[in-house]
Length: 447
Ligand SMILES: Cc1cc2nc3c(=O)[nH]c(=O)nc-3n(C[C@H](O)[C@H](O)[C@H](O)COP(=O)(O)OP(=O)(O)OC[C@H]3O[C@@H](n4cnc5c(N)ncnc54)[C@H](O)[C@@H]3O)c2cc1C
Image (tube, rainbow, N blue to C red; front, side):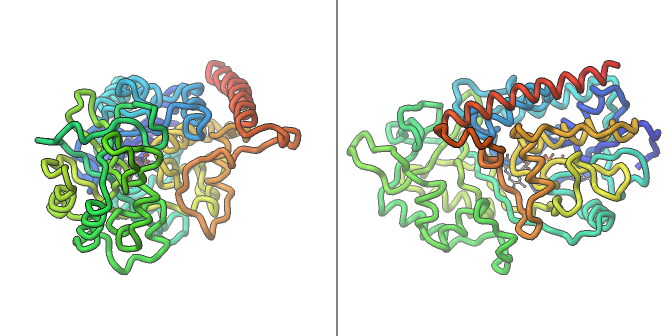
């Protein structure tokens, strides 16, 4: 890593969190150097040299602010997040979830960062932490080994990881389209572009048998803490019991087969991956089967034999730091000078949360460099509750977990309200306190 001036903020990792951190630091008026190792060195999951490439689903979660991740997105829009602004501009039409064209999203962010006069992008593999200055490490779940070693050494923690998998993206050839039922299993009246392939008992059992027998890249000896329930690949679920698939990613929910009027045994959800309707993601079917096994096993699904896997799913080790033991509410590592962490390294669970922590680290890295008090996100917001979970929860059970409304504080007088009324109030409070917080922020930046 070449030298840089003390007032410059260094961001390591040009993913979702690092892109937001770099943008926010530059917005606060300092020079930023953003290091990204791709394309010279790449990860098992990234396939382009673009910044902020989404390696898993093409979904940023639901739009609705009555849902926790919807509220977090709304808050980030209020805080002028670059990632959320780009996501909104790259959304596929008519979706219930914020589904994105991932190529367009990464290209939009890359262009914005490249053109920013205060941001210099260096395509270099960082193997050591800078010794001084404000540094945001946002190198993500697939942080390169040398940097991971340097980081764990600096913060004095053991190496931690869990297995995380992505779902295959497919093209459908010679499929009987009448077999594809629209509507969401959770809300059959809602047509948000997704399609469901229904399976009867025999078809589902044959699929589970094929999954169970298939070879997987996830090692047999993985410890329970490395195989978190929320992130289990489907072949491991099938081995543990078919009911896990039926109650989880292959649940038929409330969907009924229009031909028979019966509930199917299970289903495969196909979620649009591009605006043309050419590519589909097998939603929730995260897998670590080798690509040829995926083609063989998923190509056996009765009626979906013409399925072509164009982007195989992958299971890989995702590293993270036990943040509550060491990271403060500003995103700074305690007793490590100006070292900040952001993104999945901190234990965030998805893209929106990664962007949020990038925002926090970017802003506070500048404040640290300028010897100002850190900006602390109000606790009445979903963002503040996320930071609270990341930095103050019980460290012994710590693992990535998405935001939920239970994390938000409730007033005692709210107890008599219905769940909906309470949420509405929480959403309103978040908007008011965040507006005040951001106005204060902007006033300082402009002073
Ligand atoms: C297999 C898999 C599937 C996933 N599926 C989903 C999903 O469906 N939905 C979801 O919301 N999240 C998913 N995630 C989590 C997702 O990766 C995060 O939500 C989000 O990308 C985290 O953002 P980040 O900025 O922390 O990391 P990333 O977006 O991964 O960015 C880190 C960047 O740092 C770079 N880098 C790493 N080491 C170095 C180094 N030494 N020097 C310079 N640059 C470096 C990398 O190349 C990368 O560009 C998945 C993760 C994995 C591994």
